[in-house]
Amino acid sequence: MKDLLTDPRFAITRPGTFRLKDHTSDLPTDLNKKELKKQLEEDKERISDLQELLYASGKHALLMIFQAMDAAGKDSCIRHVMSGVNPQGVRVWSFKAPSSLERSHDFLWRHTQAVPERGHIGIHNRSHYEEVLVTRVHPEYILGQGIPSVKSVTDINDAFWESRFRAIRAWEEHLHNSGTVIMKFFLHMSPKEQKKRFLERIDDPKKNWKFNADDLKERGHWDDYMRAYEQAISATAASHAPWYIIPADEQWEARGMVGRLLRERLEALKPESPAPDPKAAEELQVAKRELLAERD
Image (cartoon, rainbow, N blue to C red; front, side, top):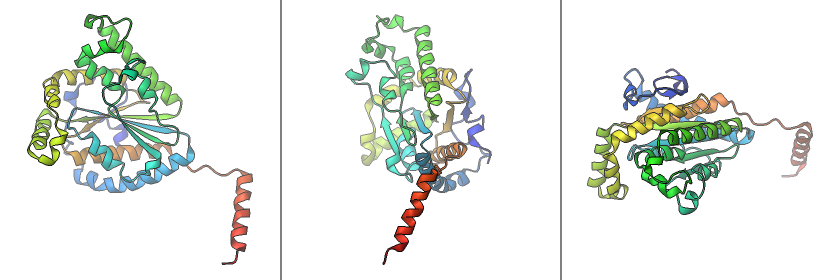
């Protein structure tokens, strides 16, 4: 199987016209789906080893960004792919509607607080892209952010959105230049599959808590959201901050793809344990001699 990191069917690495209809929500038949799902367990073990080296080297941070429509499986994907890593080196942020404090700052402020430090992996379950997705579909939400130049919805025009895209591109480039590796995942689910999952949540009492009536209202804006995603991905894809379009109609396949991509990206970094300096190396040998000299 070719590297998914560079497969143009999934990796969007430069800005330009992007159309979701050119990307399937189900894995292509030429990919060995059973192999991908089986290999997830092996990838998780490799990811665990690479995470330890990432932590030891302390040169890079890894920021994984997940965006999707409701019920696409973000939570379960994160849980399964990251189940083998050391929790001390990973933190997950699930971004909900901004608080009054967060609204009193610029839209990137709360996300900047959640950037992982070098040696760590950070996961943003929803992200700063909500500010060019949900707010694009519901521009009235912008009015509550206290932006001086925005007096009414009519002020939220194409120039406004391009300004936000510029801010996102500049912020992500700054993170890249500071040692943060960025991976952005869009779990691409069909409306048919979303309907099926919503019905499962309604019919299964154990899953009732997952369903919210507002989810159905947002489903009514499906086409608007798809246009917003196309515009956001088109404007912000870059070689240092690529988008990965993950077919998500089958959750195990989506998990397998994300695991494979994460493993490939960590391997490409080639993290290594730092070599001890001469003084530290000598101290190690002294400690060894002392331990060996002890009487058991």
